[in-house]
Length: 394
Image (tube, rainbow, N blue to C red; front, side):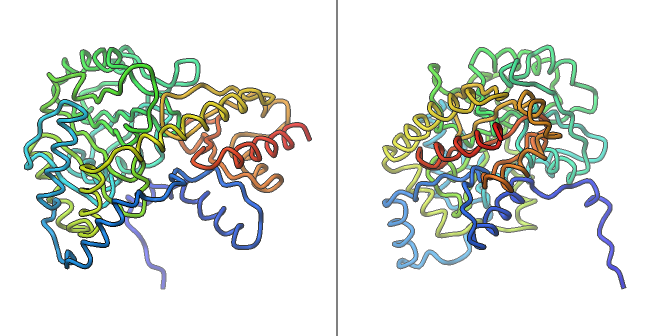
């Protein structure tokens, strides 16, 4: 007897980054010396004061259900964070805490989108955006950019992509996979286009806000475009900035009616996020921010070495990033000179022949590119560059 799955599942792909992580883990377990530059995960440990808060929470008995949308303490810490760092004022009713920023984004797609709707997504994009849209029954509309456009969409491109079906625009700045970030002026220019299209909700994915080093201070979309505050949902979390990926706490802030809908989705799926993790996240947001700055400085040092080293490889072109811990070189020249068919085949050759794991650009809607994570030591990055060079010059 065969069991069928729903038709919507035929539209959705497994996460390519998850597949690379699983393969690298499997090969390491088999004894292979794998340089894993595939995973988007900080290599630092969670700061001690955050772990101490979680340990105390266990001892104090914070082990029960919490409100579906997060504890009052954590929501208050999120309010303070938005006011302190972004100049944004949210009521507690405008905030929902989820089991990771990924869940917040998924809940938003289900709350906003339906069959026949369209969501505009700049590409290269984080791998999960299009599939979340598809799971909501809607259609992703990709605006292609590339290294020559600094991986940023223009107001003219945005205007051309908008149709009567457009319901959502996804903006990720700094971006996974490119590390590119929008300036305040660039966000204002996009906002001027959106001001003429009142049916479109904007979701600003700010998860890499604190892993950022551009000359201009980081600006969230709602900060740059206050006139669109009432239809902007800002998502963030503690996983990247505080090295808390396993704690699974993300959050979103936006219009009350959308947050209520997102809470409703969550009430029928996971219910509340982990109670202990919420105490830890409160300590992260309200506590000493020095570890965040120290980790960001380490990423910047790695970035400065690694981007230059990749750019010097034959057939590689690598743009300097404004943030995140990813390098996203165009490798079209290397594909041509080596005779390797495409970026997917190159990732296979890299892991098979020189034991370097990375993710093909095709997974992010950008064939001809590769994504490397530099959330690892400088020594590891230097080893990776030597290995890649061996493949290219073999």
